[in-house]
Image (tube, rainbow, N blue to C red; front, side, top):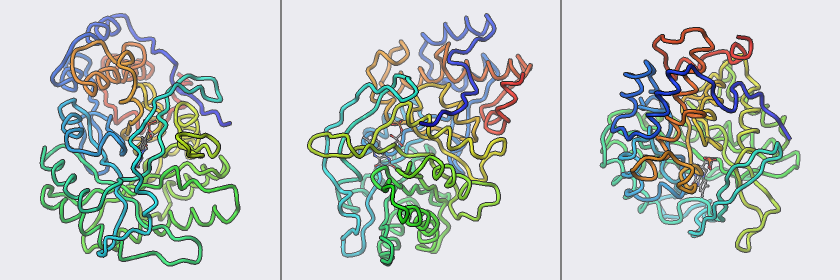
Amino acid sequence: MVRPKYFLPSEFNISASYKKALEEDYQTFFIEPEQHIKNRYGIDVSSFYGPLKIKNPFGKASGQLSTNAMQVKADIEGGLGFTVLKTVIAEGADQKSEMEAWKIKAPKMVIEKITSQSGYDGYTVTWKGRGWEKSLAEYLDFMDESLALDSSYPIIPSCKYHLPKPGEEYRKEEYTYTTQKILDIWKKHRKSYLVLEKDFSATLAGTEQGSEKECVLAWLKEVPEMIKGSVDEPVYLGVKLMNTLLTDEFQRELVKTLLAKDSTWLADYAVCFNRLFDPNKEFEGQVGVAYGGYDLSDRNLWALEALLPDKPGRLISATGNICSGKMMLEYALRGALNGQLHTFFQLPQSEYAPIEGSRIKKALHELLFNPQKGLVAGLIYIREKLQRPDDPFTFLEVTSLDPSLLSEL
Ligand SMILES: Cc1cc2nc3c(=O)[nH]c(=O)nc-3n(C[C@H](O)[C@H](O)[C@H](O)COP(=O)(O)O)c2cc1C
């Protein structure tokens, strides 16, 4: 079991006037919460997803909640910063996929309480599916429809390509064919470079054998080159890194090798890190399923600490048990510019802020305005710790702050 250093308290203790203001705001619906936060608290919560500007750091992670355009529309209307679409499985021109086994139809998801090894209660979603279960052609229609909804809202496609076993060749044709098709749809709607996520999922977590380590490292190094070389135009590439079943130290080794300032890794940003894998847990007749909760955030935060006090040499998008503004800030103190959430959008509604509105709107309001553990309370807390209680302040400043300063002050 690994234990991260938490740099923030479990509840933020802030000056009485700001506390009172937040208690009011927690109960109030805002059409543009970011503008309100700027006006009332002097805080800018905007950030970036890769090269794309986002109005707040909270987005939807790739998965079952981004498989149709209606869901994406609800994200836009609910005020999220961005949406990552479900992961499609790459195909060649013959419509065949080497990763066919990842196209599983498994609609049933169960949200369960889970206590971490460190004793914290959280939630996890259990299911036995994997990637987009339908064809690439159907995914392209979905992507087309989603991107057409709003020309400025960041919507990022996600793909899983062929990963050869040691000694096998990459099926290059799947890389070229699929990336070009995704790029064509992107260019119909967007002027910027294609921004694309490559998913290394929990189900690729590997075993304890030594050879797995070399295999994982080879994939992580070679796949960005394969994707970037597969089309004639630049691709802004994010790699969603897996939590391997290898040792905790190996997870840190990945961070140091790929994300240190002097790393030559070709990916432009990293999503840190996909869910943990329990090889023994059974669900609906399948043994071995992914899980989350505080075990996931504990391992992710701990692994990212490997670079401190340096910040990563790549942009970081965080994922894993982001269930409060406080958790977002813990990742931000390790360099993350945004957070991708899945489980939080599936919780009982009693976990969200007491306002009227859609599930997404309420969830986002909770993340921003909760007076004890929300993002605004956390940013006020950090600003007061830095002894700048009324200065203009930004979320982005936190991403470049040395977190040890907070414990020293
Ligand atoms: C039901 C379910 C389906 C998921 N499917 C994908 C997927 O297709 N591609 C992907 O990159 N991540 C997938 N994920 C991982 C999430 O994107 C996210 O990174 C992970 O669940 C950690 O965030 P959370 O703790 O907020 O759930 C899935 C997660 C869940 C729970």
